[in-house]
Image 1 (cartoon, rainbow, N blue to C red):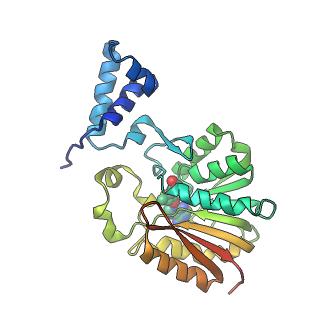
Image 2: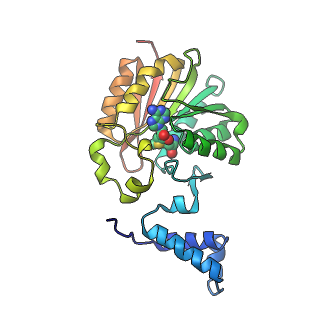
Image 3: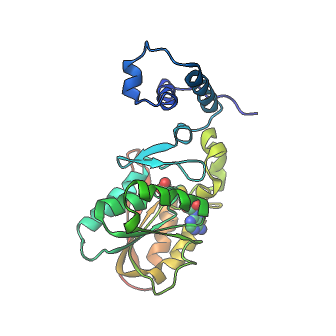
Length: 272
Ligand SMILES: C[S@@+](CC[C@H](N)C(=O)[O-])C[C@H]1O[C@@H](n2cnc3c(N)ncnc32)[C@H](O)[C@@H]1O
């Protein structure tokens, strides 16, 4: 049996805004205006959904990421604020190598948040790959919303399996599932019940998908290319970092605002 969650005031305001087709500021500025019966019933239904644990982003069907609004629903993971670090680091590297970095791959694109932001900011071409065809439909829709359809491609593939070896990228950005099996029960109930399990679980240690990814990586990276991986802490940084080094990458790690090792950046200096 699931427990009801406490609905935060801000969630309630967002729900009222959605049901009455107003901005939050308009709702707050019109607090004494009466609601009609249809809107009241809609608000009640949505508040009940939230109280049953459905994440607000799946109710409002939107989430902000890197100051852009993305459409989200249960087919995709809700983009997380810590993933902005991955994008920031990618953009930093690209800023210093504008001409050299031309072909970019967003592996495990989900809602397309990473790929679409990079395409929009850099006007470079980004191939967005995911194993889930349903997620790719959402990613494609978001690319249209951000006006980057002409700069983005979409491929349904288990990691690199759907790509020819001749296709090389200058940068691969990956936010693949990295939750370890024994961490699953510790995740928030909203996450466990509503977000796609295939977007979260990364096997026993959380590194299984990344380990397979690294096996295929050298075949698809240009000499001197970069890989950026979002990870979940120092134990994973050690396991994944070691695998990358064994393939000839020099590796550095970046911590997020909570001090957790969150991004590994690998530069491919030599073939092993
Ligand atoms: C943690 S989510 C990241 C979603 C999005 N990139 C973001 O940052 O919000 C991981 C994504 O990887 C995809 N995925 C899982 N296993 C995969 C595989 N073997 N090959 C390609 N994509 C995979 C999932 O479907 C999911 O969309």
